[in-house]
Length: 87
Length: 87
Ligand code: FES
Ligand code: FES
Image (cartoon, rainbow over the protein chains, first blue to last red):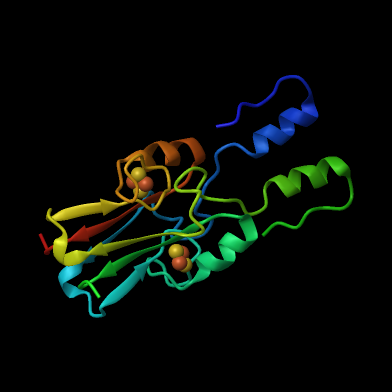
């Protein structure tokens, strides 16, 4: 991570703001740790996308919201795809 | 998201710094979008944990790094668990 500078208050204020931050602003914040389980034998579709961007409206599933997140932030995150067989 | 204030330069600087940020600082930044696929029929273990915190040294697998991330940031993220059967 970036180390806060101690040389000027303006610089210090800025460096503090870019230190490590929460990546989940909204999902299930009442839970200490958000862990989800998938019983792979019960997957119904050939392909199911699971969210890793913490912006999906259908979390833990991916709803495509990673596209907007990546555009807004310059990030490059995407889902985990569970496949029942090679296509 | 938070709207930058236009009333003072100090406040504006601070508000800009807390707007939406990248959640993946390091993993496969040469790729436009990091998507991984799991062929569930090939899972070898009864339980496999996949990372959703973007801090794992064994990404796309979870190596427990979410614990350090959560402590450092106050976040509550955790892995997606793929299970071959109900236990
Ligand atoms: S909506 Fe989060 S990875 Fe697609
Ligand atoms: S290391 Fe990322 S969720 Fe566990």
